[in-house]
Length: 163
Image (cartoon, rainbow, N blue to C red; front, side, top):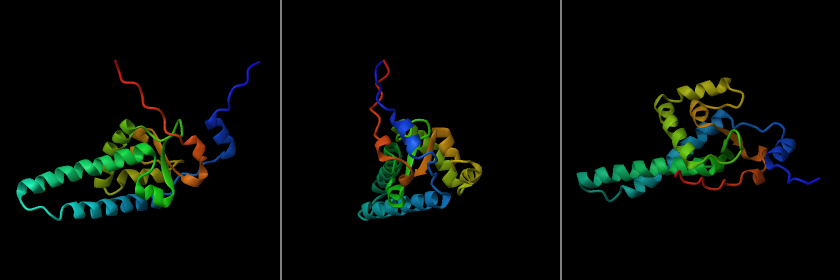
């Protein structure tokens, strides 16, 4: 008879049989914090623009940084706003941070939500785990940090490239 190492996910489920989804107001506030932080950073970078070419470059760099901020933040589990409010984006099956590819999908689904002023997030109020449309598309969910064991939330190794 061989002894198997305990499954961290199973151990986590035993320790916290009911993890707590992040409340909608915390999620909206985290997004507002992220936007305010990013807007301040953008204003700092845009002070020395002078011509139309520099302005176009500034907008392009700003857009790339904005997209990267959310993709890398969600891919690691937390943006600055989520860290401040104690929430975390995780894979709803593995409970680990979502990969950057899925974070990119989440971002592309999140943009229409922001443009529609939170319309898809309204459906989250009817979902047991308070998942917005963008969470459903990306297979993610947002939980309260203190309702999950940090030892379960280790970063997954990079996926091997396709041959």
